Length: 480
Image 1 (cartoon, rainbow, N blue to C red):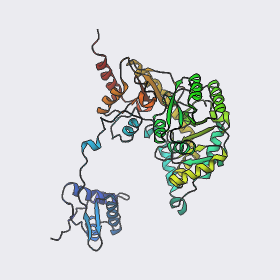
Image 2: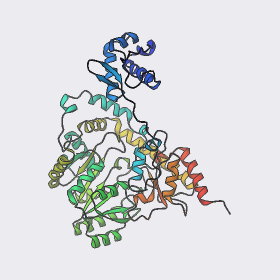
Image 3: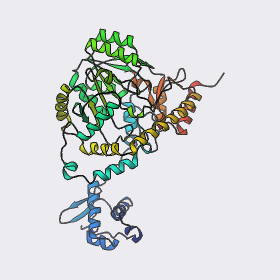
Image 4: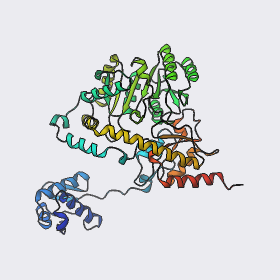
């Protein structure tokens, strides 16, 4: 039985607004499909008929139909026209809602935060709210990128990465005392990929790797993916516990030590020069390589000591990215290494991801060259300092005590009231649409069950404190 074209009424006021005409056509068709006026398999009006009824050009309707086809809303049958696509199976609540039963492991916070629905609070995530980032500078950078030549928009890029961005990075590292030329830098798709490449290059399954305890939970996830043996070193307000570090090196003969430069994640601690020198001396005697992640460097108010600066990139590899102060959507990271390691890392990058993300690198470079970026970072530090004081004070009112008051950054590592289990509290919070970061996801020894990491920039909503007040009150029980 033939399908008859369905007329769609024109809304002249909306259809004539420049720049919205294609969207208006798409919305009109989506609305009729949602209202069941157009059913799966039914034929849509011809391009000419719809253009005439909506008083639009045929090219506008063609573009709208093509976009709807790309979305899978409609489909084209050459010679026959356009038809409503078959209905998709509806998502179940289990598919779109948070997984309340998922084990609290190193992937727990990442999965919950990356899959968070609109309206959920994310005080456990590791990044800034989008409106804290330089949106206008990013848009300017995108407009400039749109004027690039064909090769820049469509071709593979050098696997070592955009030379101009590597030169910019070399200058930035020099400001922090790390001497690295552009040819000692390799761009990656993220800071995580940078760590992954270094692990592929330097360790084999079964090798021992030292990490801080607590440490960034994705360090643990990456190392487990490489089947490394993980040994935790207790962290102090001035860096790793040197005595524990020395004993672990002597006992386990590790290949790597993976740590944060600048602002430690999750504790907010800052490495002292004395600790840095002692750690480097032990590493040099044991021929141990140190991987130093400086992803939070731009949030520092005063530069902390860099192991890579003291070492001259001989036993220290430095990695980083631009996700914390610029954009997590523009995936660009880097590795700074000794010259004789560059070629091997480039080969590994070709084997695992082939080229570099030229578009992301060019966008990041456009923003970094923007004169407003330094002002943005300076304003960000001030804003974060205020948030840290406010959130720290409100947490203390609830009996949640910061382990230390960080000099900078966005994290507060806090001890919960006695007897409170962070994992259980996080599961209860998730049921209320709040994603927290319980201590043991950061701890190789699983000794941080009474700790929680709070992202100050993401912890300013009253709903968080209302939940904590109620949950901790219930946990304590009635007074007396």
